[in-house]
Each structure stands twice: as structure tokens, then as C-alpha cells.
Length: 299
Image 1 (cartoon, rainbow, N blue to C red):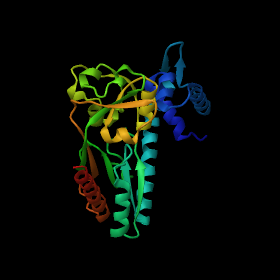
Image 2: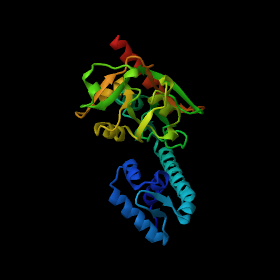
Image 3: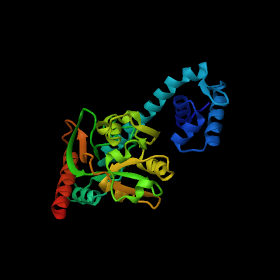
């Protein structure tokens, strides 16, 4: 009997949401497809994992027994994949650059050109990491250096390479979309897309938690920017983003407006504290130099 890691991910989502509808939305799959996969998993295990009422889903004893083991297996598989990537990179002289949202800002061609000049024989690999990993893949070893928004967890070093104002994205038909800009007071009672709880300080920052007088209203969580903008386009919520990302993630069904009174966001190059490899230093220095040059040009 072979159970796929994907099946376990589906099971964990339903177990955590206790709703096939919410789990399907979280996984970006259809509810019938999710239900079918769970039924197949139950058939393989010869055990019912959920009791299904008209409006309520609950774990059975078998489901409760499986949940911690499923989480552990998913985590172990993730660690195994990262270990394989790390070992392969060491053999092939590959440096993996992690990111949560599109890097843009001229950094990718600048890093690539500098690596070819200063470290011939090395290759760059770019890897997008979901928001539920606030260390951008660095803690697990699958990423060597990252470009991401602060804050980041302890144990990582960072150097700010750009400071950008925070904007808000909303559906084109939202009443506030007609304004050229908004204040945070205009939007703080709106419903927002949130990063996963495991994102920690990043989740709070992109919900502007420090500027709120009441807890945020969260419609859904998203693990990537593309997921977030699909929710925004559907009119279900707003999401905060940086000014530069408002250009990188432009689309016809979403508008972006500056929020005039929020503290700015900081984009940084990030690495494991104590990692003194030349290739990591080259990427970090190149990101800073490129950003500094861009700022001088803009001035």
C-alpha cells in the first residue's frame, strides 16, 4: 500500500480546517476532487478518517491517530528534499537563491552576470518558497541565500537593499478603487488576506498589526502571492504589498493604491549567520550594489 505525500497534505488540510470547503479553498483544488482523494486514502488505510455531518466534519479516532504522524511524514519529506538539493548543489557548484515574491528590480540579471564574472563554473538556481516558511528555505538548507521582506527569524543575517512604501491591492470594483490613495484608517476594517500563522512576524507586518486598534478581519490565508491575488480578484479580501511588487504583480482585475500613512517595507538579502562562503558573499554584495545604484539613478 503506497500513500502519497500529497494525500497526506490533503488529509492534514481537512483535519485542520474541519471543513472540506475551506480545505479545498486553502489547497486551491475543487471540493469534489478533494473529497475523492480523501475517500481513496480511507480506502487504502481501511479506516474512516472523518465523520461527515450535514454542516460539520470531525476527526474519527483513526483520523486523530493519523494526524500527528501525517504532519511528521510531510515535514520529514520536506527535509529529505532539502537535503537532496543541498547535496546536489555542493557537487555541482550551484548556489540556490530563495524568494517569497518575485524578485524583479534588476537583481536577477545583475546577480547572474556577477556570478559568471567572479565565480566561473558556478551556476545560480532560483527557488520560490511559500510564505509558511519565514526563513525562506534557509533554515532547512535547501536555500543558500535569499531575497525577501523583513522581518526574518533569529539565526539569520540580513542587509536591507531597498525600502518601499506599502500599498494595498483590491478588486477593481471595490468603492475605494476610485481613489488615487488611501489611509490605513480607510481600510483597517476591511477583510484581508493573511499569510499563514507559521509566517510569524511577516504575517503581522503584512496585516499592519502594529498600526491596528482592533484585530484584523481575515477572510483567507495564502501561501504565495499568486494565491493571494486570486482571492483579491474574487473580491473576497484586500492584501498589503510593497510599491515595487505592485508593478511586478499587475493584473487587469486588481488595482493597487498607496497607503499614505503606513511605515515602509524593507527588502533584504538574507543568509545563515556564520555562512562565510564566497559565493554567498558575492550574491549579498551584488544585491546591495545593484540596489544602491538603482537608488542613485532614481535620485
